[in-house]
Length: 320
Image 1 (cartoon, helix red, strand yellow):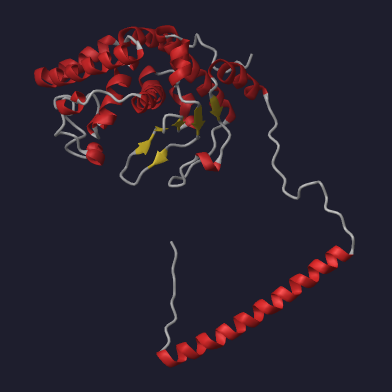
Image 2 (image 1 turned 90 degrees about the horizontal axis):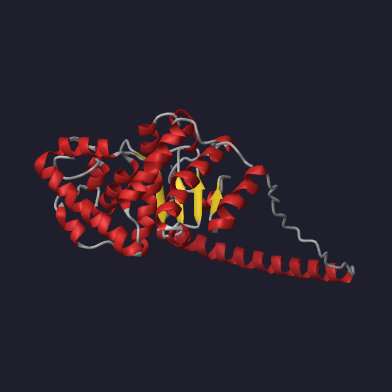
């Protein structure tokens, strides 16, 4: 918070003060110019030579084992930078953020590689992943908290960057598939969907299915935080806008099992299921026709990989 105080004066006093201030300012400038000229002459007369060494120093980053692992597993195969060191210019200054812990950043890098990059490699081919996955992943340790009681899990920016927040909470969710999905895996696929949409927009018919039911930032408030399935939305956040609805449809479908999806459709009732299925059909066609990606196969791959992670079969700490 900033407090500004303004001093007020009447007309005559203000004019007198202004004139006097102008005289003082002009005099001060003349003295400054003379002093600068004198210093310049003195410096030149001393015959000093300019040093070839800059007075500006730049911090030198020391590469460690994790950096070398990222070079082999992100930069070399995909030309993707995974930034885990805190950088002010990559952060959103509207939120209080902290750096990712080194150990948690390593595990998150393994998760993104195994549960997203390599899953798309398997189903759509590595050329797809190289072409469309954003070239920068930036992580922060804390969630980005908003003043409406919600917090941001991740963002996608301009087709080139994904922010993943909450890295320092990863350890407590690794053994639970639902939590891992909710806070990390779904976020990665949700944000990647935005990147794909920024590359090639989805059909306009999608937004017409529940076009009058989007509620923007009120999605987390009563009554919208309940009964969303029956209204044709796969999650509360899907009610925000058609863009978020599309990303939620894709990410919720591929990150959850067929059994879980069928449970949701049962809860949605006939009308809710009809609306959600109509949206899903557009999402599937969009991915198949535009990017040659079968969402059923992608879900199968992700479910297999998810079980391997939560059962502890995948080493998320190795830097070999």
